[in-house]
Length: 499
Image 1 (cartoon, rainbow, N blue to C red):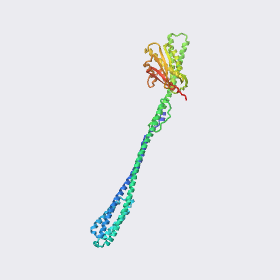
Image 2 (cartoon, rainbow, N blue to C red):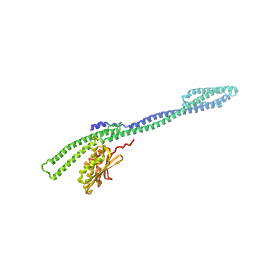
Image 3 (tube, rainbow, N blue to C red):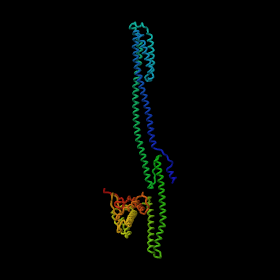
Image 4 (cartoon, helix red, strand yellow):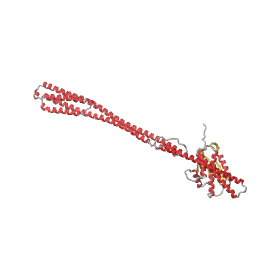
């Protein structure tokens, strides 16, 4: 048996499905976090580009304003010859323009072509410085207006080129600003969609995993419950609990317990049958010997010897009946007793058993009343007569015992069998007059309680046999303390009405 147990249980492999249920959302959320991180990085990049373009736009606007100042002051200086008064201011504006352009270079992106524009603006600034240095003579202030205009023309043309370059760069930067702003909004929208999608996926996954986990556990626990119910019935367990967790180990343990229980029950049954047959043979031989002594002895026996012989014969009969009950109970509990059902009249069955009891207890002053209804049921006649015999004998024994112990006054007594149809079942009750006392009813009820630990007695075996036979018929048995009766039920055939 231990080898069978080891073969069924095997080496424990505890792998929780709950671990997979935990790791699956973790892996999914890890992927979603990575995607969300990438999306946020892109959104941050587009936001930074937008900020850089904004800085460049602001700087170019300031450069454009400075260029206007350079053109205005430089033109005035060339037309009026006021280089000494305006020269420092023009030089300061040119230096400011160079500083602002140099400051914008780290913020400018390659899309707006700032490097090319910066080189061209630097060349124009150098050209402006050259033009300004060539026209530092104070006497030029007395030149005529056409001469002044011609002298300022080259300066104005250079300043206009600067302004055009700055405006072109500003336009390109504004276009890039709008593009990056749109990309930033799109990246933010994608991030929002990713967050919403992640929440939805997590919600669906949570419900799916909860449903799967609950269904999986429920199905496997249902298998365990069905297998556990088969153990006391000695039925083989063929369903297996899949997986590699504790429930699987419990299922394997139940299968091992089922094998051990069935093997133990089979061993007990075979041992009981062997002992019963071994005991029956000498008891039967002893009964035959007593009968031979009674009929073939030469010397008449004394009344005391005759009484002793009758007591011995009754004792042997009781032992044989007890052994027969044990064998019958083993067959009934093991399911080896196939019953053949035929249509029988319940009143006639009860009457046939009562006739036997009237002859048996004629000296005890007992009368018997048959109140069973005229109902025809599909039953096994032999087994049902055995139920009536054993139940009536139990009630009569308890009644006579109560009367001998002075619970009832001496005199005639009555045993009644009544019946009625209750909810598609035929209920028969066995009672006495005077009624059985509570102590006697408690003893009968104790014989029905399989969980109560009492000594094995013929009445307990009889009640166990009756319970098994009635269960095979679809009936039940019990004790009614209020009515002071013992009852049992049998199902009726369903009535079929007209079409």
